[in-house]
Image (spheres, rainbow, N blue to C red):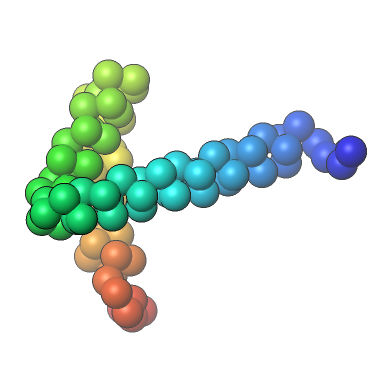
Length: 86
């Protein structure tokens, strides 16, 4: 077995969980599209569900911080198909 420091092991576990979560989301998204649900509706409901959960878990201030971080990422082009540096 690997002999990694606890924090490094925790980071690896978190990265693996995020990858699996992304795969679940991609599968659900594809299922929604195949059922005729528009991408915009899928996106809005995904964001709404995520924000509801963030507020429940961490409160409104944290959720607003996440929204601000996402806003900055949009401004910097992080979510563009072909991101460019600004």
